[in-house]
Length: 118
Image (cartoon, rainbow, N blue to C red; front, side):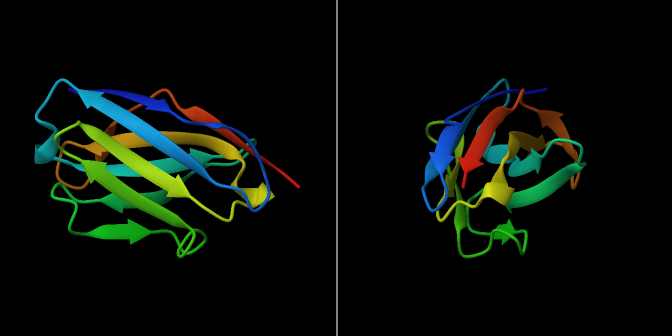
């Protein structure tokens, strides 16, 4: 198992930027893929972005392509989500997750709130 702790959420105006961080511990960080998900009030948790163990491959939901960037620092055991050009519809609790079982995100952080005002 791994422990994941998100930080960096907050309140920002539309058009602004935030950078989320997720610090991992408990298992060799460079051995697994990581992802970001989000859940808006009354909605299901949705995929946002993912990055493979080496950082060479990234994947994005269509709704965030060109605005969000996922990255990782394996020396610091941290994955990041840089969010630019934020929109009110990006408002959600953002979760980082670890893919420990070949294609399944099965370890989750506690979430960090992002609120974008119009």
